[in-house]
Length: 230
Ligand code: FPP
Image (cartoon, helix red, strand yellow):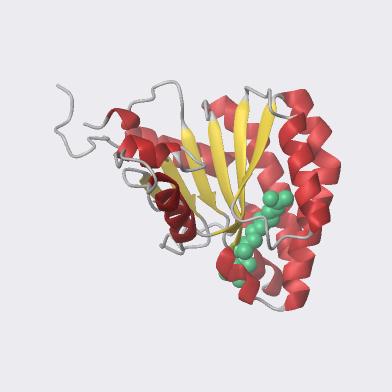
């Protein structure tokens, strides 16, 4: 078994927060209202995560393919990210939440990049939870970038590859809104993740749903291709 799978002190949960648009349109509201409620659901999830011993939480906030959405929705999402950072960085720092952002930065507005850098510096010492927010993120692009990095050296090991990726191996991957696909999220890191697909739309996701997903995860036997421990 590759040793990078054994990290008993960490519990990495990744979430594809799907269903904001459906939540809003089913109520006759603009899609952005669904995203706004999605931020609240995320805040509740961050609050609840440490009580389930989650050490690492990675959330898919904006994929590189989401640029193909209408300008008005892209703009609204970007301003939600800015507002979140304006509002929550101090709070994260105070609560021991370390904030990191994964994904491309060269296509983001300079002001947002500066806020991201400030948030990362301000919360760097947080040890209660490491929250990674994926913005302009594509796992295939991230893997290409990592491959470019290791191409210069002679170490083509899994460990070297993993060290070039911005996120650790995923233990539990949750996707909401009834969809069952990865959508270019953490492809390498999810090699042995347990998947839990929930019908709940992301804005309705709460502590009980997280609890349920963690319980499902705990009931699974993780073998990593070997046989279950005697
Ligand atoms: C997918 O639902 C959701 C997104 C593309 C955006 C997710 C973003 C948030 C929850 C906000 C995160 C905020 C911060 C501050 C990190 P969808 O729009 O594809 O839903 P649909 O499939 O029902 O249309």
